[in-house]
Length: 479
Image 1 (cartoon, helix red, strand yellow):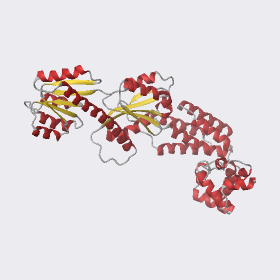
Image 2 (cartoon, one colour; image 1 turned 120 degrees about the horizontal axis):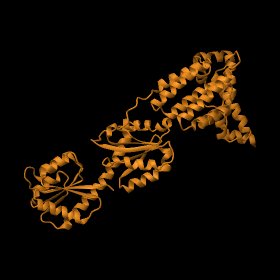
Image 3 (tube, rainbow, N blue to C red; image 1 turned 180 degrees about the vertical axis):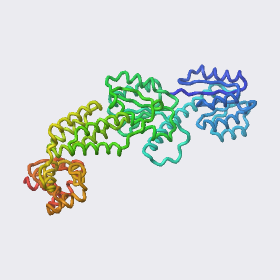
């Protein structure tokens, strides 16, 4: 639970000290009392310090209690205020209520009256802090997802974030440490990452280092940021997500303070795609020396910009898939390779895997499709890879035959007398029928015939072709 700061302002030192003594003797948990004998000094302090509760006299020289409240309301509008004075006129009370003052106590008052009022405003303040934290979480996520944010004020937010895959390991310990230090927090999720929001008056650097030290692996990265303007939420949260890839390239667990880390210029998707396209061309031309040089550039660029490991792996999968097709590898072999590559957890492992594939390709000298007929080669590709949902005319044009897709479509139709899409659909549906007749489940058949990502579409095209849904077809055949 956070500490509540109470400011007492009274030009009569005896009164101010007496009020402070009453509050201190009550030993209210998590309470800090600050006393000023000058309202001007109090305002100067409030310019740079956050206060939760103000307890002030009305009749003071230089700056009256009402004038002080007016300035307080401008500087810290959420502050709760108690007026304690010998001047109990209705006029003073009415004016004070304009600034949200709910407690107007007359001197002399009993300690119980003072403490009852103080406990009420502390309760209000704690509830307000919880609401503020909820609002900050909502605002930060609204900015991140670019939702319409009309009003947000001059709010700051603080957070730390790590990948969801580590939450089972460290989530409970982090929660325990936060509660132990009585830090109020809320937990959210963005982009498959766990994010803790907390009030900006706290610092969590030591806490995070403690938790990190207890983690046995090398791949954990926790990013944190404190006292950041809420309107910069999207930029800062994206920076944090970017830095979470740190351990993939450096094999080192780390707590990163975003304020201390430089903003890395990220490689654009287009720039990386250009490099991969050049590698594909080099492989097609059997220029392995050029291919290896380009791959080295890709890894250097990825490391220096902390490029997304997922996007990097997928780019390699796309590149090698086209090469494997020309080699004649089976769909099962390609699927096994995909599973293996996606499971790699460091750039060193990925580089080793890519290097091994390159050596195999160089030794095999890329067994290119043998037929002189473009259409026959395309049919051979369909026979081997019909189960892969990526297989389309466009994909073959861009990744295997390196031809204009419209021209390739016309060539195929001229040679075969039908569109490529028609041939691919018929081939897949014929395979689907055989599989259903063998008693395979509908969802299995969808996966085995290239529809694993869209089983509903499989049902639709199958019914359109046969007049029956796959399930009805299976039941009719197996009767």
